[in-house]
Length: 263
Image (cartoon, rainbow, N blue to C red; front, top):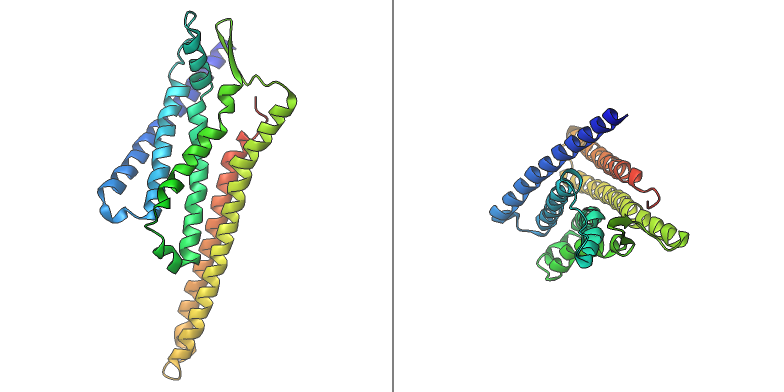
């Protein structure tokens, strides 16, 4: 049994190490490209850079929190002991950034929706000073929400005890809040946005098809030009629908196993 447990721990640590290193390398490259290439300094790429920064720090914390050994609780310094228990043993920064990553992904989806559905208004607002507040929002919400990891932890007899809830109601409330914030809201937003984008593209392409048909007149028959364009439009609509289904399904699959009761 001990050998199986040790083998399982080594396997998990190896997987976490590979995931962490890939996350660090990949997100660092994305950040370098966005910083160096000045043409990428727009709203969409700022949000992508913000996503990469969040995921880069998450990857580093994955290595620090789940691969590297946790620091021991000091016996002669209660303030430091409380800090290590509430901040580090609870993995508060890691889980806060996980929520921030989910929320920033939702913002990226909304940004694409705004750019496609309201293109003229979008371009007139791209240099708004509110962008800094939008970028900071996922960070603030992530760290603000997961404060309960610090508040519901305590040190007793030189041991760090996590998820020490005063009653069942508080545990149930936090479980519901986590499911609502981390899974329900982003999933609904992503599904709604991709459906709206799909409908917008369908309406736009239908209108363009009608306009091109009117402008061609009797010079070119509609059968000569409409078939390839129609096939391209149908293919584009199908690709948007597939993207919507894949993104929504992947998001739910990745987050659903983490939505159990708070331990």
